Picture 1 (cartoon, one colour):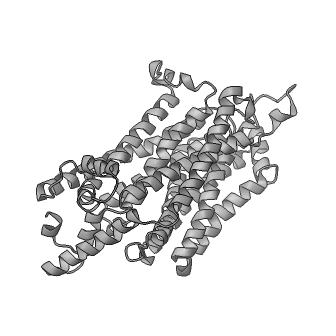
Picture 2 (cartoon, one colour; picture 1 turned 135 degrees about the vertical axis):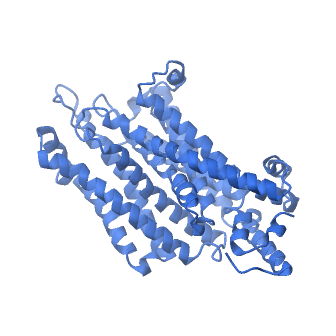
Picture 3 (spheres, one colour; picture 1 turned 45 degrees about the horizontal axis):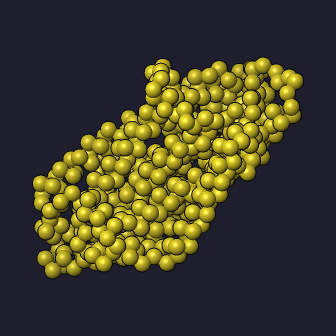
Amino acid sequence: MADSLSKEESKSLLTKIENDLIGPIKNHKGFLVWILVLVSLLVWAGVAYGVQLSEGLSVTAMRDHISWGLYISSFIFFVATALIGMLISSVLGLLKIKWITPIARIAEMIAIAFAMWAGLIIVFDMGRPERLLNVFIHARPQSPIFWDVTVVTTYVVISILLYLLPLIPDAAMLRVRMTDSPKWKQKIYKILSFNWKGTPEQFHVIHKSIRILAILIIPVALAIHTVTSWLFAMTPRIGWDTTIFGPYFVTGAFVSGVAAVILAMFVFQKQYNLKEYITDFHFDKMSKLLVLVILVYLYFNINEYLVPGYKMKSGDDIHLRELFVGHDALMFWAIQLGGMIIPMIILLFKKGRKPMPAMIISIFVIIGAFFKRYIIVVPTMKHPHLPIQNVPESFHTYWPTWVEWGITLGSIAGALLVVTILAKLFPVMPVWEVAEEKGVNQEDLTK
């Protein structure tokens, strides 16, 4: 917290913060081009999904033996990335770590976007999507799938609330300052401001409500990826039959989520001219956090392969050989080295934690995290307990078709589109919280 400011300095600082954070909403170069790219990918995905609906899942590379492919891998990746909202806003927020203030809303935007599209990817994976309601109508509490749907939905709802509550004072400010915006925007600002007056009592209610939600979302967030891991771990299949999958998936989620926030921080810092608010200090802190979560995740990776490798049952032998020196070895080692070990080593040095290198490293970590989920899903399904006999050669292998790639890339574009729209409608960081942190007087915030 800055030293106490005079009344004139406080008002001047508040005006500057408002101008800096609202400015990109009014004028953002390259916005239409970026939207066009994302919409084009969504159109491609729509065409691909139309083909899939028309001809069935036979247009994918999934078959009887490898029945989970790119869709389920993408689902796990999206759910994983969505957990960053809990880590930043809840865990670090409850610990009263002040440096997260400028990036908490960015983390929540990513959480909402990726959690929403994670649910849609499950629908894409269904051969009969019209039967989705049967999950609820004929729900079986003993089924991990039922609980997976439940916790994903709950997480989306709480994440939206955690995004909207700190937005109320900003929406009231935008209602006053954005009178030249389209009427539909003004209406959104009016609705989301909830007749905000800026009284101390209202600020107290918001702080208390955010704290309650931050506590509630922690078990939900842990459950969302733990239950997802149970979909794998509750089968006796080689590669999934392990008790570590719960914490293994959660720690892996933090890796992809932290990397996604670092990448978003860099983009918003450059595109929205926020160097004064998202500084080298923030990149340094987030990079150190990324090193920490990679170390924990690396520990679980060693456990995942060391224990079955030590016992070396016949099924484990085939699976591990394929990963280490066989058909999947190139992807496996590229993920381990390029997606975890090398990035972690570079981030140990201060120069590696500067914005540009941290952003580049985060891209490699995100790519590695995506294909790590592919490695978890596909190779295991290539080695069922019963020998594969009297089936076409295509049943022995798997590589996604253009339909699967189209829908997957469209899903990524859809998540990015949600983040983009939110960043265009509202400030990417809470104006009133940043103002508080910069030392603006409380009476100026409660005007």
